[in-house]
Image 1 (tube, rainbow, N blue to C red):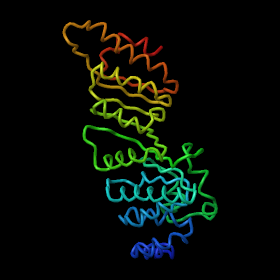
Image 2 (image 1 turned 30 degrees about the vertical axis):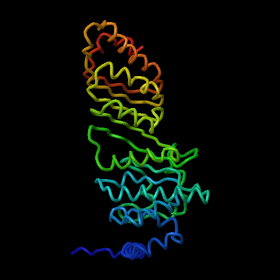
Image 3 (image 1 turned 180 degrees about the vertical axis):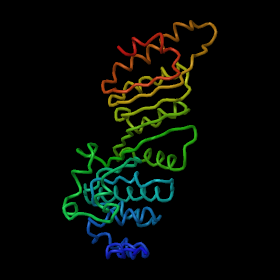
Image 4 (image 1 turned 45 degrees about the vertical axis):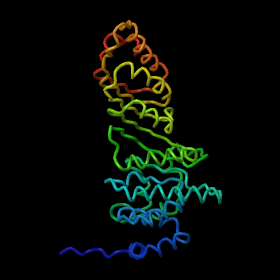
Length: 294
């Protein structure tokens, strides 16, 4: 017969706060910063939107990797995070506080939650608790700060889900107050004008991985090509499904097509950080391989 380990005093305290949201919110100003991560994680997973909103606004760490907690889509809790950022921006404007620096919405593993909420066995070493929450978990995006940085990955399809629609509308309205970094962008069957509109918010120079699988024709790709040339941090590029144009009768089809191809190929010489290149279903690849790899 197994003996169930009783909850710790800290766990009992978190349960009390989660049952009384008004008490939890009023206690945040006096709550030790070491207790923030575990309470936030419990509130986030439990769908306590008011507590999540208040905790984001009062976040005492430079870095909040909330994306790794979003295992399943939850528009209400996601909206609470964004509302909390809005509250933080208003507070920062008046108080000049610069503690909270990076909101990371990527669904990737981070040491942060392991360090500040204890390991799976519930243990958390004293040495870890005594450390300030800066160096080990803070990525390079936060080394210099002017505005709050929002780091994300985007997978764009013809139909955006609720969270994507909400997020893109939110960043469009606040782009002057945020530094927006899209690290990994996947574009699937999306009109070019939509992609260009998004790139007016997320600067192409900050994209490190790009997957372009759109079914565009080569003339559309050529119009988009200057955006690719601006992606000076691009390390990984996957290009697929580019179709041959059917130009209007009366034009010099071959010459126009060749100009489009040349415009696309010219961008590769600007991608100095590129390490991985994948091209599939590109009809002009065979005849222009040397120019691309030059």
